[in-house]
Image (cartoon, rainbow, N blue to C red; front, side, top):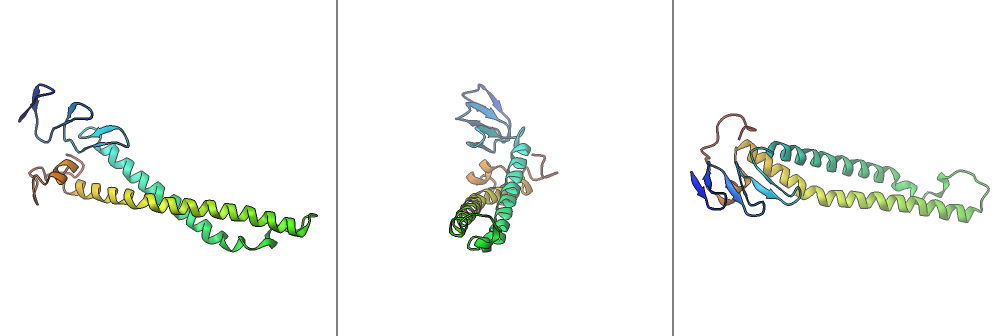
Length: 160
């Protein structure tokens, strides 16, 4: 057990002092800037579920947007979709083209942004899945404290 100079008490194993929160966190994983909180023993499950649902959300948004882009790509240049209205044909075709083009551009933008956000989020999710399976924390993995075998690798994966 180590003595924490700031908190003035003995820290249990795997506990680290977070300089941003200015407190000791049991099973300290990391300080997450996105949730503005330390991730440790009491909230790691919630953080991991947040990552998993965020990944599912991004995959579904990207997939549905891509589906609509593929389905609607032929309608961008097809001015005959509107039907018959008593409006000048050129104005009608131009309005249809503008509406379908804006809709297509919006969906393409959602697809591109979704794909660009998907890459780091899926990487973070896969990394934390690896950490859960091997019963390590981000702090231990980055510092390389235990090498191949961690003395905390026993029991269920979500029990840290």
